[in-house]
Image 1 (cartoon, rainbow, N blue to C red):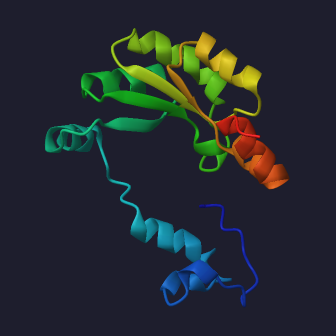
Image 2 (spheres, rainbow, N blue to C red):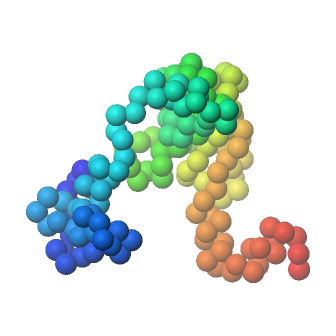
Length: 163
């Protein structure tokens, strides 16, 4: 979001009506950038992960792990699982593909915590590849949405086994 793409000055973000971020600014980039900077805390550290782990009895799962180093840090912080994800390539389009990062992360974890994968899954063979590379589970987003967009009744019948 730091690319400062400019938008027409009359453009508005309908979901943010009433907020300062609803109107794009043609001089300094998008209002969405300002909203994101104000809303999200970029100062989070690994110490915050430890704090969260100690503050709850719920499982703590970290998403966005794409390197062996971060996987090791997650294990050290005693998280319950990690999700290998590049967030669909939206945040950092130069991030490695999840299928490329998966084996490195699985090897670093050495079975101490579960590893899931999210992103880049377009067909069943992608799921099989991820499982073969060591993922415990594979999250599927777009293919399910594509199926729903194509024929929601047929998809629901295939999933539930009803005719």
